[in-house]
Each structure stands twice: as C-alpha cells, then as structure tokens.
Length: 262
Image (tube, rainbow, N blue to C red; front, side):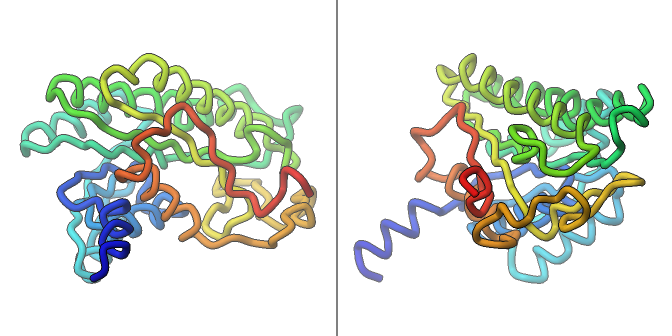
C-alpha cells in the first residue's frame, strides 16, 4: 500500500471504536450501521423491535463485521438508561453515537391530534436528547472523546412533503439540540453534528397516513441529481466519526442532490 493509500485508509478507519446506532433496524440508520461496520467499528444495533435489531446485527456479522443487537425505545427514558447500563456492564463505551431512531409522518397540521404531535417529538427530539445525554455522561465519566451524529432531514429547513409540520419541527429542534451540545461539550472532545438527507430510498415515512417520496408535494424535481443512495449518508457518517472529522462540530450537512439550489 502506498503512503497516500495508507493515509486515506487511516482517515476513515474506525477500528477499535464502538458505534451505537439507534433505530438501526430500518431505513437510513440501518445503512449507517452497516457502513460503520465496514469501516471497522464494532456496532451496537439498537431498535425498539429486538428481532429487527438482531437481523441487522446478524447481517453485519455475516459480512465479516462486529455487531450485536440491543433493544431500545428512545422515547422511554428507562429503556435508554437500561441500554447504557448494559453498555457499562459489558465494559463498553460508545464513542460513536448515531441518533438514528425516528418517526415520520404525513398528517396535515389541521388533522393532527395533540397525541400524534407529542409522539413525533417524543421519538425525534426527546429520544435523541435522552440518548445523547447518556452518551455524553458515559464519555465524560470515562474521560474519552466521542462523536455524536444525528440523522435529521432537509425537511427541518424546507417544507418538502405536505403534512410534515410535526416531523419538520421535531427535526429542526434536533438540529438546534446538536448545535447546543456541540457548543457545550467541545471542551470534552465530544463533537456533535447532524446529517440532513433529501430524497434517498430508505428514508421513507412509516407513520400511518404518510406520503412516500415521490407522492403529492414531494418536490422531487428540485433534487437536481435525482434520488440518492443510502450509502451516501453512511459514508458521510464514517467521515464525521473518523479522524477525518476531527475539526468539525456543530454543523448540519445536507445530502440533498441540489435541492437547496434547485
């Protein structure tokens, strides 16, 4: 291997790192978990459905990576606390944390109930806060630096799908949470950033009544490069998590195929 190739490999290497990925049993969080494992990280695939978490962990192991499954409902504080207690009990510290658990929906604001609104924020904002809080507490107790990367959306900055008031608002709050945590914990060596995907298969709404990408109001014509690939998000997460991202914090990274300028 040439010196240049070696330097590039080292810039993206995650060997010896433990990556906790919430929401890893589906969508882009699943793709991120797989990509982090390809870069050498030992992945804890967490999901509120244990069977889905194990499916992803098994796929990573089958591909030669290191992974185990864990159950976590990010909207339930006791579940988040149990997840980090389990990490501590195993002698593990998650120095890469992907806030990938999310709820999406396409219910018009005038038809949305207060319960639906609260449920969206419970997962997308409160759940991310609880997970990040415990991750930072664990990292500080261990005296270790770390990376926290939130999976947000371009819908946090622009209306993309009709009926996404709660989803966009909850993710806009997530963006601000990331900036605040980055500001407060730079001195601890904990870097916090958010990734904002656009029209990428695997980033599809799941909430009942949601409209899929390409449906009414999707504005896919504004994605100048068309649909992206899940790997586009995964490799950006690797970049931010590895040595290559050591001087980046408090940022929101759009992967939108030119949507913002379309």
